[in-house]
Amino acid sequence: MMAEMIKKATRESFGLAVTAAAKENPNIVVLDADLAQATKTAIFKKAFPERFVDVGIAECNMIGIAAGLATCGKIPFAASFAMFSAGRAFEQVRNSIGYPHLNVKVVGSHAGVSVGEDGATHQCLEDIALMRSIPGMVVINPADHYEMTAAVRALVDYQGPAYLRLCRLPVESVNNNDDYRFELGKGITLRDGSDITVAATGLMVSEAVKAADALKAEGISVRVLDIHTIKPLDKELIAKAARETGKIITVEEHNIIGGLGEAVCSALCESYPAPVIRMGTHDCFGHSGPGAELLKEFGLCAEGIAKTVKQALGK
Amino acid sequence: MNSTEKKALAVTACKVRMGIIEGVYHAKSGHPGGSLSAADMFTYLYFRELHVDPKNPKDPQRDRFVLSKGHACPGLYAALAERGFFPREELKSLRHIGAMLQGHPDMKHTPGIDMSTGSLGQGISAACGMALAGKMDKKDYRVYALLGDGEVEEGQVWEAAMFAGHHDLDNLCEIVDSNKLQIDGPVSEVGGSYPIDKKFEAFGFDVQTIDGHDFDAIEKAFAHARTVKGKPSCIIMNTIKGKGVSYMENQVGWHGKAPDEEQYHQAMTELKAELARLEAE
Image (tube, rainbow over all chains, first blue to last red; front, side, top):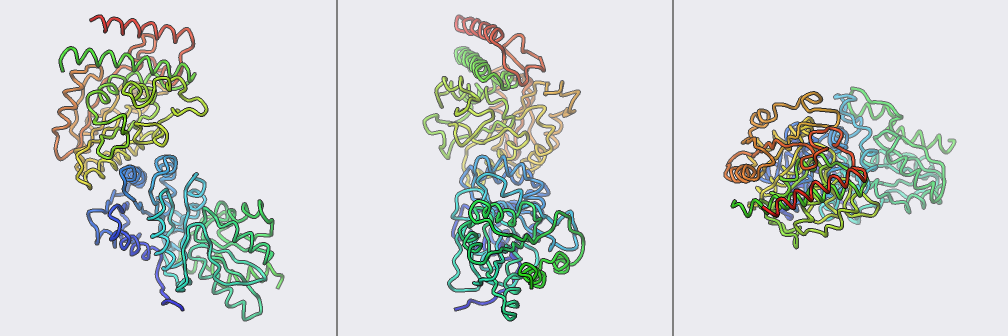
């Protein structure tokens, strides 16, 4: 059975999901730093104005306030662009949330180059690296509407600090499957395959699925893993893929330094060393342009993934 | 406060100072200067002002205290030990491997610590969050935070101050330990944070400036702060860095340095004499 295919930006799915969760859990509060329309926390603000806090343009303070709220039993979701919540306020997240292991969900919206026209200053390509380096921090990057909805529910139940990455562009759902089950730290096999594995995260998962489906017609069998949780990483699923398909391609809208690619390499080094090709931005900044076109420029699209698969297989 | 109560506070503050010296001496490191300057404030807070219960340190109804100038934790630890949150013996293992008392406050492992702090400028934001939670839940606990007069050079302090003023957090009381010295020298020469009172006033605080070593003045200021409605409070306490140990007073070098054995004995001799004098009064 397939549920309805929904094309929606994960930032909007987040706004809807946190609002729905708040109807059942009175402890949920949402903070923003003057970007409520963009991060879609405005959806929550409309439903629960008394549980919404706009701190103004002061992300470091927002993180500290979220920490203080958490010490009093609240479940704060503190949102801004990834560049600012994970980037600018990194040390506040590390010392005021990570070290005391407080129950704050740091939300980074508009991550990656798909921010588009705003350009490099707003295109955060380092947030996954920063957040996964903090001890005890869970890092989640959902692929689509269904996954974001489930991830928010899981984060409400999870007691501890977490980083949730949201994207700006609408994305076609790939998890519109009635059997879909979200579990923190467990990847999802979206396509089975035997020639090679593509392990993707966030916006790149639907592109990986499209690439795999196109390659199937050419007789190439690609396994697609949806790695929604980058930390803790599903090491077993990745080692199994390496054993069974030989090679792994990682795809992320993030610098290849410190993100999913390096996490996969680290895991395989300790379990089943195998060749890994890391797709992402290659230690460079982005620039202005329409988001979808920028993704293509960096090869972060179905065509780019298919090309990399063929190169890896010598075809 | 009658003279017996005031004498009791002075005796306790002297014991807190002895605890500070014990702690940093045994740690062979730490921050005695800013702990001693705030010792009277710590004593007043934990023995007169805060509604806290050492037997139930996580009571949701308790008043909160955030040591935003986290390096002054030898003073906070000594006050918590005097108040019965943990045994005084713990002070001697301050900063040791495996010890409960970390170099900066750790809320996960130390009873009575309401927020992990140490990276300057961050505690005040957490205090704002606690005060906001109190408002949201219509609870009547109060939140106190101690800042340094060097610490207020951090931009985040003013982000938080703007927030507290804007949200009318009258359940929040900021205290500034104005001991006039920071690591690299006098605050007036290094960071230029003065005037601190005018800044907090501009951010919407009710501001009082008092002698931070005068228990009558401290009592009056906290009593006034509790009556302020519709805005947060700030009490600037003029203090002497290193107060109570002659060779440390007003000396910038004692910001973050432990006494050697000879200096330790001298400090303890001075404080014991002061304690005997107070008890004989």
